[in-house]
Image 1 (cartoon, one colour):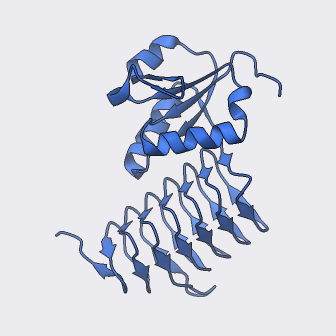
Image 2 (cartoon, rainbow, N blue to C red):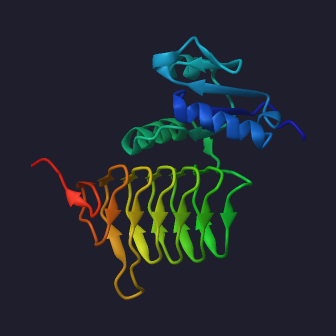
Length: 220
């Protein structure tokens, strides 16, 4: 595989999701496309993951890289947005990282900066925004719309005709009931669905739900 001329791959976030992202990068042999792969994580600066260096943001800026692609491996949607905006401001280019063990059916469109882990199935006529993380063994049904900076945790089921708006966090093993073309199930922006939450109706913005069936525990 040809090495890109003086181009680095930057992974923002060196926690558990960063480690998983690196393994996917290695499986896809992307590390061989770049002359350098590095992490940004100020809290872990000076350490390494599999011999790849971790820099603080200030240390990274001091490298003055002329060209770099990047991924943001941070589960928290708001922190992921902030990191993406920071790297965009330094003229980085967000790439999609898609496991070959994921299954896309037909007419799936997506933006930039997305990470899709193994075992995921995305059905037909699905639209996905930017900087979305879809973790292992999740399912996105037909005619769904996923906004930007959404986190889909492992083993989530999103049935057909569902709209998940920006910066939503969906906990592991959660499910969202099927909507219809005339009446989509909507999950409002900034909403958090806890682990194993079963959503049976639309949810307004900035709510926190848990349980089966889902109940609202948002603090007033």
